[in-house]
Length: 597
Ligand code: ADP
Ligand code: ZN
Image 1 (cartoon, rainbow, N blue to C red):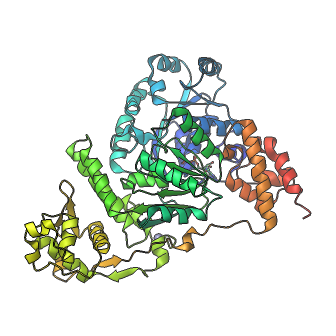
Image 2 (image 1 turned 30 degrees about the vertical axis):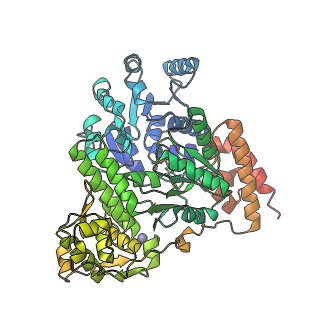
Image 3 (image 1 turned 45 degrees about the vertical axis):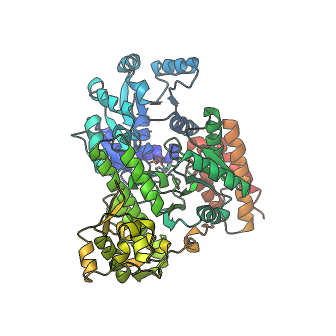
């Protein structure tokens, strides 16, 4: 095979390139380096894998985690591509065999960790081999602004010197400006082009939910999804354990994952999850980078993520297979203070803390947004877009929005009278006319604003203050918790700016959470289950994950097109030559048994 499209058709079984893939591949084939910014599921891997197959020599792929490499290598091997990885977790003999294979030029694609790559012996060894391309996956790990900073990535700077004539392809799904600047600097890509694709994930459906009996809300969400795999993120290990136990006691197939678990137990839970299509993984965000499971159908943040970038990465773990998937954030006022507290207590410089608080503010604004969720997310990532028509905000069509100008004025004037020195709890007491000890000590019961919102519940006032913060109509000094006015407060106080607020719908809009049902008949459902069983058995005997055998989207096409011979089988999405050879007959036999029904 000599051209990229042929490889795509015959090896991968895909009909055409998507997005910028073809441009990137041609650029690399002509010897150029580049930075590739593409969302999760955008198809980054093919951008280096196809050149790797067309080049003579060896392609090195730098990847941060062994779990990621194992999965990629298994997927490539199922496609009939000679790929391998080096790992300290492998037995010494295994690594030696791989080294020998590299010497014999029997390997096309080699995955390594950055530590391994910059090891002196190894770099010496590689400099004597013919290296055609170096791909640096998850390149944002190079940046300390990023959420997955890995100091060893910065050592990759050496590649530009040792392999100055080898094209370098850095890939990431993080769009952040500062991260981008760091990648370009550390990986020596100043003169190389940047290929970037929209960060929109059209198959993800976004919604947020204010915390109101979090466990009950989670359970009601999960109840309709027992036959799906998904992730629930919590902000602490203790909470992960608590929620796992709660779900298990409620009859849900759940497992936990966090850094406090014993290594083997953690690996065991991860493997179970990778192999399952009907399981909840309750995890801290430590469970993240290492997973490459394409059929994650939802990511549910039971606690608020700490920035838009974290959120984008974490929610992005759903729906990599481009089939519909859901992102939910369950959030509340309390977490904002917890997260800001964590940021302020951290060891970073003041500059970085300010940067992180700014990031936190953006995720709060996303959660409280009155505009299309997708649009606010993309705006925060620096992209323009139209309302999506599919998120909770678009679907609720303003039903929950009301004019809250008067309430906003009351709150802002209370803050003003309190000389911008008091926290939300105290402001709420004054507004409600509650003569707490602190109120009496400060003689705030004598203020004109005392009791001016007595008819409104404490909870409602707190959520209104939170919304005003989200809409940038007031500030919070997180070092002491004091509420402050800002430049946008004045027009509201003067009555020249209207304030729109949102009521709190407790349960998620059913329209979006309704599962997309594509199995049209009972017959199709039976065929689907037969295919799932066969895939499960095959995956076990090949010791790979389900999707390395056939992806969900491929199964769906099989059901829709019912291939009963090799010819129709090879035109199915994701069926290349190796898959046709290995699995064609099995699938045709299963489909044929339904032919006369
Ligand atoms: P990323 O690394 O960007 O998250 P992947 O490289 O894992 O994404 O690709 C996501 C999915 O899309 C994979 O299942 C991959 O095989 C599939 N894919 C990639 N390119 C194409 C294409 N041109 N046509 C169809 N499917 C594709
Ligand atoms: Zn929308």
